[in-house]
Structures are given as structure tokens and as C-alpha cells.
Amino acid sequence: MIRISKEQVREIAEYLDCGMKCYLNKETGELKTIIDFDNSPYADEELWEDVLQELEENWDKYDEIPKMESHESFGLMADFTESINDKDLRTALINALNKRHPFRNFKWVIDNSGIYRQKWFDFKNQRLIQWVKDQLDALNIKYDNE
Image 1 (cartoon, rainbow, N blue to C red):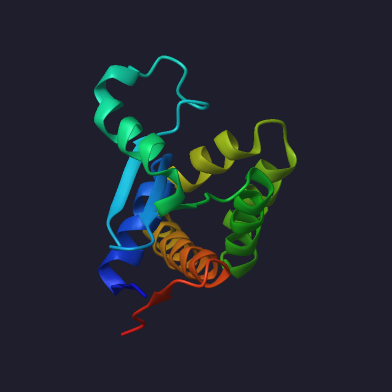
Image 2: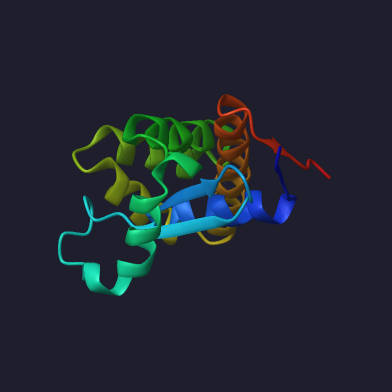
């Protein structure tokens, strides 16, 4: 049985955050990543031909590590918003999440929030790492915690 390193867990979280699809070889632990063609309709499949062929020919050897659904990502933003001590910023983020296009609005507010921008990235990164660990647990794939 394979065991995934702490670095691989972080790497998967980063790829998922960038919108990539992640596939883990159940026998070797090798990670294959590919652009999410469903969300990138203009992406050139030829650039990914080797990976696509490998995954197609050996689909039974790979488990996909799924990304967060949009409602889960929304919950992540809401959780961060609740953790903010700055009342004005918290109010601005709550308003952003309650308008149309909450992801775009949240991003705009957080990008203009000074030190809280980095706090958001740190918060999101930790939660994404936990997300990956939860997905690995569901697939019965072991990983290093330390």
C-alpha cells in the first residue's frame, strides 16, 4: 500500500486550488495532473495528450482527488469571514458574499484588505490541505502527517 508524503498532500492542494484535476496512482503514489477541460473550454488537449493517454490506458490504477464543490468553497469563505476581528472588513465580506457573484466580490474585498489578504491565503491553504487529507481518507490512502 502506498503512503503519500506531506509534500505531496500540499502539492495536491495547490494543484486543486489552481483548478487542476489530480489523479493518484494507487500502486506507485505518482501524481498526474491535468487541466480541467470542463472549466477551461479553450484549453488545448494536445498539450495534455501524454497524460490523457496514460490515464485512459490505466484508469483502474488511478484515483481522482476531487476538488471542492462551489458550495464548499463558499463555506470556506464564510468560515474565514466569521474569523475576522475587524468589524468593517467582516461586514464588507458578509456583504460581498450576499451579493450576486459572491466569489468575485469576496476576491475584490480580500485583495484590497491589506494584511488580511495573506491571512486569507494561509487560512485557505490549511483548509485545502485538510480537504485533501479527507479525500485521501475516503479513498483509504495513507499519508504522512509530520
